[in-house]
Length: 449
Image (cartoon, rainbow, N blue to C red; front, top):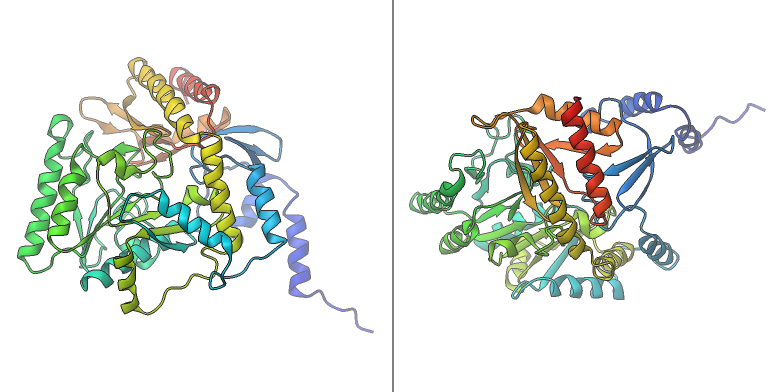
């Protein structure tokens, strides 16, 4: 009898077992053989990360790393309450959200309760990209128009619509040249190095309002305005005071809607505020959220008003197979419980303030630090070669990140100039962890990279 050849599934099992052995270089070679090249990885020679705990990661050599970038794992890596809740639910039921079960109802109720009136209607999806894409479609259905106003230096996702309103040249070098005609951009309201700086930053709002009025006069008023209410991709930077208080009413006078993209900055990360839009003193028409709400599980949401949500009927019906599934809803509920029980928003406020003060102290010592941006546990350390000209230091930033990793700290560059150390760790970060990060950065800036 001819020996039976292994089935594709059996071959796959062998490969899976083999992938758990071997060194980092061999695993990276195999990764690059089958994963699309544009699906990038951190570091040129990345360690093999095997597990995580709270705000630390561990590689296959049991080397610990302080994780200063993982805003996805908001309540900490490998939280036992999430693991237990998922295991219990998988032993009971996991199916699509068209079935009637308690967890999706309770999760939607609790999400709506986190938002001010009249934001009381929830769509559940799988990611921030899907949330932004759906939010844009809601605004188009509401207004019957398509023109969108977005700020520069922003990232909102990778789907066709979400990418269209993403303007960061760090994520797409051709971002500004390849926008479709229905996307209109505003100056990045960057008070540190933009067109208007310092005390003049209030002028961004006046320019934005003028642009909206021009669009109305030209017969193409915006269907929507989309922005992070706290500027994440630019380096953890607050918008100028009063910016959204001026822009939102101007958009609404044009019968458009205002989308607050809270995917990175919301869910307690800012410490003093649960949502970024609270810092600006406004209430958006649509809120998008993801990342933190699932702690690594694919979970996102759009929260809006009942009236806006009902307009989606003109587009057909909405359905997401795994969005709001029993397991996803249980994960979302458990994350909210942990945020409250472990007082992680308060931890972000206290530890974040301590960390920012320590980093500002480093800026007095090291000329390379041009500014320290941010609030809570969403901070950015902007590195410049000259504080007067603000010449960006992207090469130094990349090398510092590599050296920090060698010393046991994971940190990465951000902004269109790739010269900002983005600091958005799990909200479990302790004061000792913050001090270790500052001490390590001080050592690298003092002794070289």
